[in-house]
Length: 389
Ligand SMILES: Nc1ncnc2c1ncn2[C@@H]1O[C@H](COP(=O)(O)OP(=O)(O)OP(=O)(O)O)[C@@H](O)[C@H]1O
Ligand SMILES: C[C@@](O)(CCO)CC(=O)[O-]
Ligand SMILES: [Mg+2]
Image (cartoon, rainbow, N blue to C red):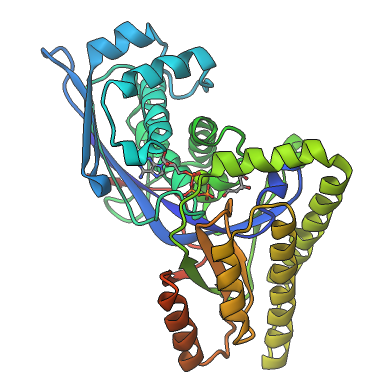
């Protein structure tokens, strides 16, 4: 039995960090994906293994299934019953990963490996199998690599879990998940994100699962924290990867520490960011038929992004490299803001409809001279997808 699942990365147009503290945020999927292919081996053989092949890193790891069972103990392994990773279990998982001597320069990868072992064994138990992972997303750069990894993995595992059948689409050989399955996949991915991030809001796994553009606010939990948005105009975004490494977990906890030091002030900043997200949601859904209406709408969008970047700087998650991108693009009156957790990583620059190719090229060339890497992305594509093998 074999299945292939892919899930997109994302950009956050407004509201990162504030969303962890209850404010609204706007996110959209992008056309860069993580793909997880899992094949199950027949059970009852000798030396059964769980293998993980991280193709982009050239890293091959394996654990004997008997060892996993001995260390982690009996588990119910039911994909339909959600469980969270306890701190005791995390200890055991870190022991299993520590034996593998993963490259020292990439210790942050370990939390991804804990999430892998947790999700696999919680959903499929100790069935022997092999997972092969490839990703088009730069890892740890603000484009949701952790969430797309957890969503693609949860999707593949759920598709292979007992009693599960995929909905066959009209077209031959095409499968899709049902809405309930998508919700389950997103929830499992959230459990994985908790292992990697510490305190995720849930926005990244939600947008990676459902795709398109969403408004997300934790307070809406009584109903659904996610509201799909129908963007009326295509948004073109230039992404600049500053190549400055950072990790979401420590940035999120640095903001929480600032909240403890300045609770009232930080609450006012989060309120301001919440208003930016609310305004942006109305704006992207508002129709704009004529050139003048489009450019008015784009001017407002630019202003909102600019204000959001200012507030992100004020909560301490910008970085010298991000400020360099903001200044460089501003020379051509283009607005940029960090996306994701900040502290380096990727920066978004809004590309207005009427911007000439020559100006775009000039900006890209200047950014590349600073040592950054630039690329354009399509905003608002599909979420998690499953393919038969
Ligand atoms: N393809 C992958 N294979 C294994 N682990 C991965 C993969 N992609 C991401 N991870 C895990 O996620 C971690 C990066 O997650 P992190 O949340 O810090 O960054 P991000 O998701 O790229 O950015 P952001 O959360 O700001 O959008 C990696 O260090 C690794 O543990
Ligand atoms: C920084 C943050 O707001 C977005 C990371 O993409 C964290 C989260 O919401 O989980
Ligand atoms: Mg992440």
